[in-house]
Image (tube, rainbow, N blue to C red):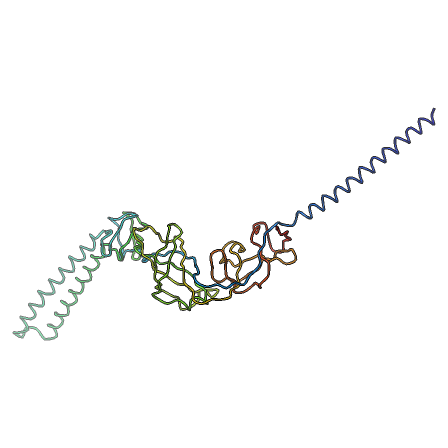
Length: 351
């Protein structure tokens, strides 16, 4: 009886140990499979496109920003308290128009005193001239009296000019974009009161590649496509920078009319230039760039690894961008999925 009980206990122990070994073996196997899946899942799925060389001719597009035709901050020329401001933000003003006034009581007193001094000096001069004829004064005394009149007249003119400076005059025509002070403020010479912006015409500023700027001339007509309206506007090149601003890009300004003030300074637009001749150009899709084209960053794929690469971009052809340096023909670049990538990330190319 005891032997049978012992064998039963041993059998239960052996069976339990067998189950334990099977469970542990399965657990280890599952962990290995999970590790393999996790390792596979570290590869980021992306789409790629090859770097190609294409024959490009005709029209090319460059993006830019509108600048106002003129922009000026109207400032006080003297010390004083602002007692009147005749304009508000959004008001249209003309050059030469009075837009405000400073307190001028003290200056008016100065003008009065200067006029009184001038009258006194002129009276003294009349007496000296009469006395000189009879020998009552010397020639030197007469010259001094004339000099006093001249100085008094200069003081009157100076006082009148300062008095006139209490009237704040707009230097350009345009729209009041910003009011910087309120009535009652005490201002010093040079303190900006309002900012006036002239957008009767606008200047589209674009950066043009060195290979293309040589084909442009002042006065050339250029089609401009604003982002906010349909159709194009005829513009004219009014400025070409004599030196590059960086990365061999040359600032170019195109002046366009602004009928009904529909366009505003700061808006985006594209300038469409006509390119002469046919050129073999290395290009990549616009989608290959990380962020903006101007950042010049692209992920290049080598052995299923994405390398963040600095390139130099050229002309923007819409959905394609010229590559001046940094890439070779035939290389694969990432066009989708960059948001999940960092430098040297393993990738899986989607077909």
